[in-house]
Image 1 (cartoon, rainbow, N blue to C red):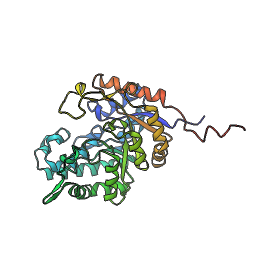
Image 2 (tube, rainbow, N blue to C red):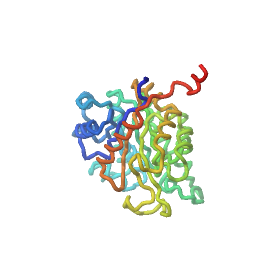
Image 3 (cartoon, rainbow, N blue to C red):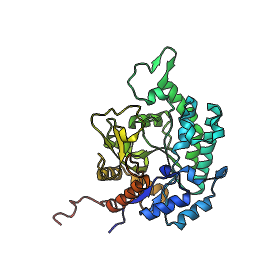
Length: 343
């Protein structure tokens, strides 16, 4: 029988309390075949661990390096201009005291150095999401009639801002053959498939602009089918996560307690989304083939990013890894099931 098209992997961002070694040990014990550490797990002193040490730690734990997650520094880079305090959890205390322009420059330098490390590791997949390059007014998605007016055009200004601010990062990633895999996500520079395609358009089709698919962020009308069919050829990375939307509760509110929100992330088995259909869609749009062609891998990771308002993080993540291992270890169809009929 042909080999499995997918293997179970895990996102490291939520596990930042663990060192790289602790994270990989946990991932291996949970049944993962690969892992996607966060940028913070690769830090050491004022810089990064050596590529040799990172490779050695993965080898010691018998895991594949499926990519490096860099959502937080990219968020800082493309959001600092707003002056928002939401960037502070992700930057050193001394950097947080600097001006928005200085913080942006620091974040750009950090990301460029991180990309150099990825190149040294021969990592081509960089899951992330661009920050609010268009401002919080547009990121809110509220249907105001005031996005353009006397002396301003927030959409046009946002497009110019995105192209200019991301140019060095995009150019460097492209020169290294690395894909900047934006997670289409509420509150970012592209919250829908069409918005992502608009970023590609204003950047003249830049091949570094890719997508990190995640169905759990399709909870305001756009289904994961319609979203990922539109951007399918740009999908190079893939989270697997589920959610539920509780009826009768406001989807948008200022409720900080996840257990009281209308939209809640769940374990893979019990959310509103059909994970099998999602994995099949990823196959249909060519994600596994595209990932393997770029990286030389024999199978593509389904990266568990388990978040739950009610269940322990380590429990939820381990349960997600086992779910992928037990339910998605199937080979892709080589042809139609009709091919042998009547033979």
